[in-house]
Length: 134
Image (cartoon, rainbow, N blue to C red; front, side, top):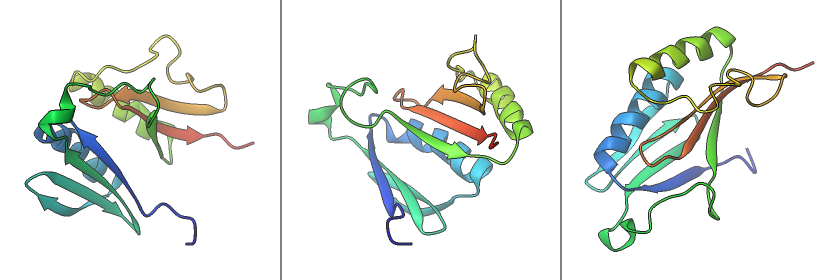
C-alpha cells in the first residue's frame, strides 16, 4: 500500500450541509462508513483511506472556495457501471443538485469516459466515472 492515499482533509463553510451531502454520496452510494465524528468535523472511511470534512474557522470563511484557484479542483470516484451513473444522475436531479456540463453528459470527459459531474455545497466539483478501457 506504499503510496496509497491515507486521507484527504477538506475545510467546508457549513459542516451540517456538507455532512448531509457527503454522507448521502459516500455512505449510500459508495459504501464508505462514518469513521470519526466530532463537533467540528466528520470523516468517512473506505478500506484504508478516508476523507475528512472540517468546519472552516470564521476568520477564514469570507475568502470562500473556488476550484479555479490554486488548490483542490475536484474529487473523482470510480464506479462499475453506466447504470450506476444513470441512476445517480437521476437522483442528483431529484435532489436539485445541478449536473455540470449537461450538453455533453455523460461524455463530458471524452468518448472513453462515461461520467457525471456535479458540485458539493461549497461548489467542489465531484466526478463519478466509469472508464471504458480499450
